Amino acid sequence: MRRIFRAACAMMVAGVLAACGDSTGSGGLAADEGLVTFSYSGTVGGRFSARGGARPASSSTVEYAEARRQPGYLEVWAGDPLPNGHLDGLRLTAYFDPAPGTYPMCSGITPAVGPCVEVLVFINLDPGGSGVKPGEYVFAVASSGSVTIEELSGGRVRGTFSGNVMGSSVFGAIEVTSGRFDVPIRDI
Image 1 (tube, rainbow, N blue to C red):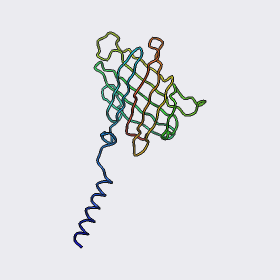
Image 2: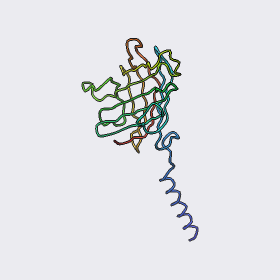
Image 3: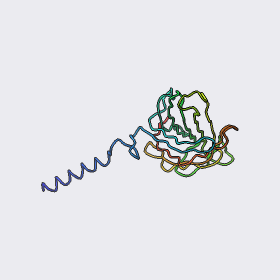
Image 4: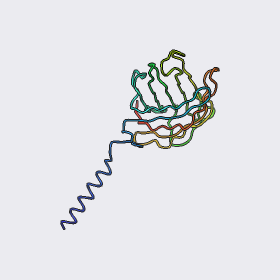
């Protein structure tokens, strides 16, 4: 009888521990921490990575990666501060209630093609603050590509993206590859 009681207690403790889990999100991230990464090439090239929590009011000094949601709207923000006081960044915006699936990239609200995800990329051309191109950015919007939402549950959104973004006429097209996001969602 005592063995049965101990076995039952052990199973209950194991069940409680499994249900509670630990405080990490997917991929070893803390529950309130996100990660966004991508590579880019073209007139300018490099790799972007931002790992952090909520986007602060003054976003040029703190690394962040999060999603904000309200009815009919989901937005993923990521920013990586640079030594010159500016930042590189990414914004993915769905002007609808997305579900897991693949959506085309668009450069704004484009109802004619159905739901699409607006993509903005900000790349600082003087990240070290050398003064060669002070405060000059490539501000690029999507011209083609797709965003795949793999998971949207448990207070997180996770997925991938790739495509082409178009900067000013000076910079032209920039290819974005290997894009990944895994971020906590904050309802606003």
